[in-house]
Length: 225
Image (cartoon, rainbow, N blue to C red; front, top):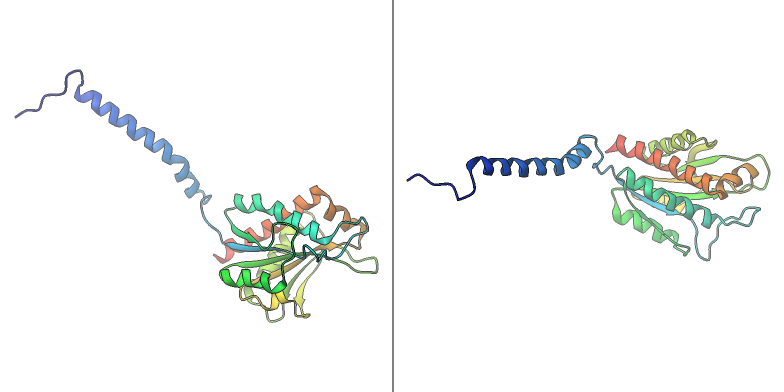
């Protein structure tokens, strides 16, 4: 028996409506497809960001009275939108001015396992003449730790900062030696140097430091994923 179309509706109307629905679905899916095609939706890794010191432990203090703990936390927070932009998952060992033990910082990274630990500090030297950032990795560090150290240094250089050194640390720093994952410690600059203090304590300098660190992290994670 031949089916009759509903009153007021023709087969052409139904096909046109179906075509419109299909077009709408395609348009909604297009941005997601484009993001995936461009790699914008790709998760590139996990980083534990460790702003050194905090709370009762101020770290070193510059001639202008600003503590190391304040500077490194500001830089860590400036990294957050950049990490999100590059689809890098992350956790901070502290997100406010509170004391966190070295053991606790290492535990956070070791519990995660498949991550990179980046500990952020500032340096100090009594005599004048020491300036620039330093990147450290542990004695007997993994290949990935060494690669991460050099790529992070390149990221900071890319943003215009002077490199003091990239080297193995032999002091037995807990965050480096007891981490089961790749681990790097960055001294952002010398609080004892007038030039370094200017960028360490300025918001523009802290933004650039954050951008340099994330630039290096992104390069490292893309190479090792």
